[in-house]
Length: 227
Image (cartoon, rainbow, N blue to C red; front, side, top):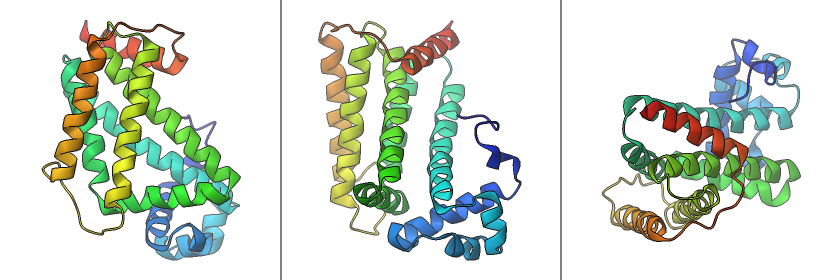
């Protein structure tokens, strides 16, 4: 998570309210209709108040995706604290969290909107790429803690495949407003597929390779909690 110096808008007490409103507008209206004016109306603030914190729409969109990622990071941290002595249980919890996340129609609409934005907007492409990099590195850290015999490069490869499968499932469920659950047939089958991949990869000799710094740091932190 970035610090306040890197994200000065965090100093403003209205920023959280604005960013929650921005996500609501983005989900409801889509990227084409997204604007600071609509966000201000959703937040119950003046347009000037929103633009004081986020002078441009690009800055508002960037802060919104950072805000969404903060939510994921907070959820990961809470799971690690709740299950401090079992890397296996933490890995199960994170997989179930991500599967439950895509069961929510608003989450599916949010990422559909960002995929759409990234097709026509260079900034959107960069934000989506950064979000995927952040997500795969974090999941790889949980895999590495639960499967310490795997090389970091293998953890990252496996994490990338898992992320791709989960996001791919949204293509089949994103058109509907219907909420799903971990007991929905498609989600149950996907969960079984993911754990099959993790078990198979655990039996394959590691390929080696230099670990990404963020993954190495995450694994080091996670393992220290087990001591």
